[in-house]
Image (cartoon, rainbow, N blue to C red; front, top):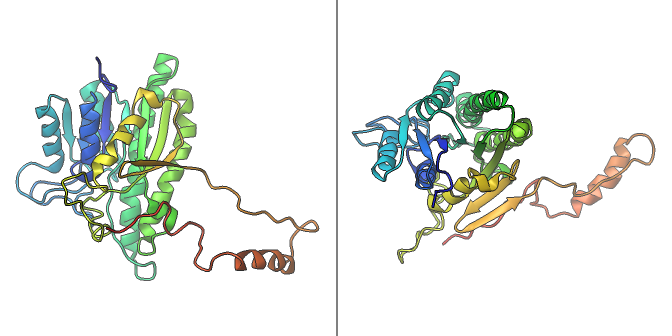
Length: 323
């Protein structure tokens, strides 16, 4: 029996540790040939603060991406490493070129690389804002741009649709606000917009684009989830990255050919499909246009009747209990 991703090639960014590593291993285990991208370098593995976007071991020896690629090959799969920075346009081009040059084509792009520079908006520096937006949002755009060029050219040559899958990584920080992460929340919101735009633009070429909001205990989130207990009975941690990787593999597979432009939250054996925003209420002007007084008369009572702590998004989109 053939594997669901057999004959397909994939790029996974930020795949040296954590979510990216789990995703690369999952794709490879289902038959894909993988380019493992991570900016972490030997002896100074990546951290959440940007010294290597995908995370790393911090130990001497092979770079994290090379370690994961070697792990895939040792298990009988095909993998090569790429140590470039996806926030650099030329490096992103080289990443896609490596996949095409090594495997003949690119079929799957999983964008996962990211960093954190947490600070309240009134304390955040320009560099802290720029660096997070650059790695997350620009990094997603860079790889998607060159992958889409590849798929568009293949489609034109083939005279019809080709196989292409984009799986992007957002966060519930975009949905719930995350007061101490204005840069991260903004970048993750931008990734959702990028994904839905990409889904529409590439549909005619046979390419799908979806975005996930994963909850996982990784190097980037070790402080965020520090208060959530790890099971002591040997069972799988509800926040283990291995809960996320099967969904990524599904979205990358032929089975998901009809799934595009979707936002899904995933963690601990749960997948939730998030609908697009809906209109909560509508008010129409009595005449041609609203006056200030009329807006005050209709909007103030509406908001006064809502909970005082309710903002645009729920503070806990799906709830998360501390163990």
